[in-house]
Length: 151
Image 1: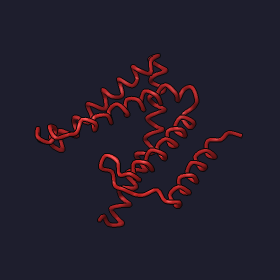
Image 2: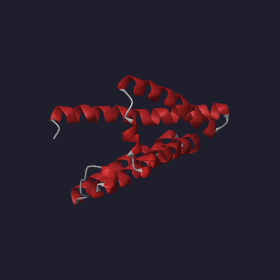
Image 3: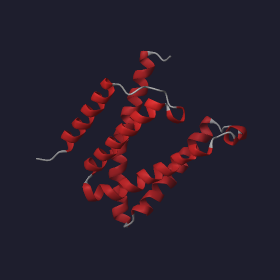
Image 4: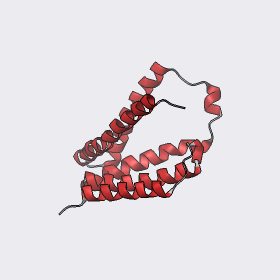
C-alpha cells in the first residue's frame, strides 16, 4: 500500500503529464501544418521520442532477454494506440481546435479508464464502477464540456 505522500507525488507527475498532452498536440499539429503532412509530423515525433526513450533506457538499464520473451503479445498493441492517438490529434487539432480535440480525447479516456478499472483489464488495479464514480465521471465530462463550450 502506498503512502499519502507517494500518491500525491504520482498525482503531481500525472498532472504535469496531462499538461503535456495539449502542448504536444499543439506543437505536433503545427509541425504537421508546416511540413504539410500529419504523417510526417507523427513520424518525426516518434523518431525524437525513440532517441529520448533510448537514452533513458541506457541510463536505467536494459531488461533481460527473458523478460522480453515472456511479454504477452497483446501488450505491444499499446504502440498501435499511441500511434493512432498522435496521428489523429495531429490531424484533427488544426481542423477543430486543440481544446475540442482534447475534449473528445478526455471523454474517451474517462469511459475507457472506468471500464479498464472496473474489470481490472490487462493487470490494471481493479476499482468497481459505483454510482459515486459514475456521478464523478459525469461531472468531469460536464466540466470539460462547459470549459470548451463557446458562447
